[in-house]
View 1 (tube, rainbow, N blue to C red):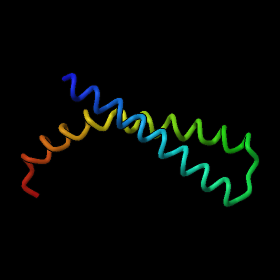
View 2 (cartoon, rainbow, N blue to C red):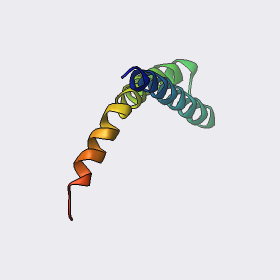
View 3 (cartoon, one colour):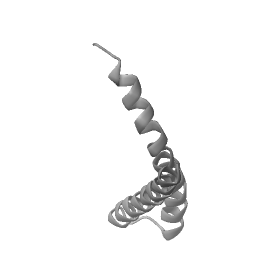
View 4 (spheres, rainbow, N blue to C red):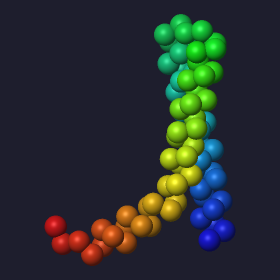
Length: 71
């Protein structure tokens, strides 16, 4: 359980960092203002961070549900 929680925190941070970097690269390429990039990066970082945080709990659930299927 502790390992799953540590993985969740690491995936959450990685998702937030990834989103921030992608927004920074896109904003620099599109010549957006600093304020626009910061506000967009914070929102997308929160979304990707939560998605990364929930990944260690969803992955085993999906695997156990898909084992019983005979599609």
